[in-house]
Amino acid sequence: MFGLTKKVRYAVVGGGQISQQAFMPGIARTNNSELAALVTGDPVKADELAKLYGIKAWSYDQYGELLTSGEIDAIYVATPNFLHMQYAVPALEAGIHVLLEKPMASSVAEAEQILAAQQKGGAKLMIAYRLHHEPGTVEMITRARNGDFGDLRSFASVFAQDVAEANSRGHNGYWGGPVPDMGTYPLNAVRNLFGQEPIAVHAVGTKAPDRGFNFHDTVAVTLRFPDERLAQFSVSYATASSEFFELIGTKASIHASPAFMFGPKIGIAYVEKTAKGSKEHGFDPVEQFGNETQYFSDCILNDVHPEADGDEGLRDMRVLAAIEQSLTTGETVTLEPLARTRHVQPDQALKLKPAKEPGEDEMISIIPQSA
Image 1: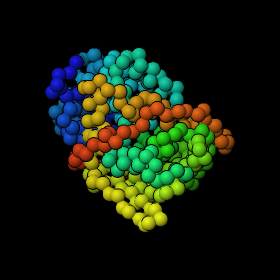
Image 2: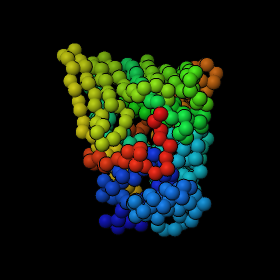
Image 3: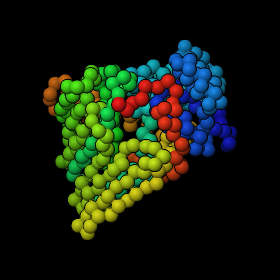
Image 4: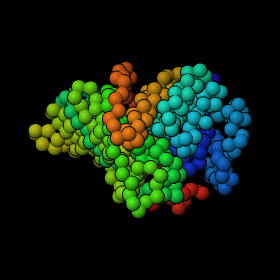
């Protein structure tokens, strides 16, 4: 399909904030990918974004036609979570590669259907875990697995922000709320730092009386892992911004902040504490969306199975579903033990320079996420 100098042609499905702010500018930093199309239901976005990027806009009604047009090789799906399956499955069945935003879907059953479509159609599927290609994160995961911090005992994290209720994230129930949206970050981080899958989940949620969200807007989660390891994280849509995690082992502890966010001025960093003292580890900001696209396109062009595949996404999904169950019942939910055979590799870290991001006032027809 591709010559040696061929670039993978992407269509962006969903022209919301994450597409306009990050993916569409970021893809220009790659040397193996190009923006070819936009799928949107907004005629203003269709007109103005298409002109801005010199690409063709398609309506959602034309989606099937786009998939068979020969004009694209891959899609980036950035719709609300509950629409992921609707656009990922037909693309995969048509042989179009899919870079799918996290969380993978809005139920385990949907995620399994997406994975089945990938296995049936043979196209590549990668879940957009951009931090799997960010140098600081990859270093922490690599060092944790190499035993630099000793026997790992516990993990704690907070990821919180003040979300506008008018944004789509504010009124689409649990699967549009803070646990799948933000909790996926500490969940995925600890799964990869420990190199293990949780075996039990308990969650407690609250609702701020002055907010109108139709879900628990602040949630605290406890995860139990094999080998007597514990993890706890809290997420919120109704507080001031906060993001960090702490990993504690028998030889050292690390405190990472910033730990999850992206941007031209945001470099992931961590402080390592041992009996000998503290050491700061800082990393320059990188183009996180360009990084993951560069990696995925390399996988497509060289026929390599991506590390953050559908199975990686499904492993997070089963924990997110267990958290929902625990919030409903108040009980601890036991998970079937799962072994890990694939891990983030050191050479996945890329260092593309950050692209300029448009401000919220420069983006077209969006309802800002921030309150």
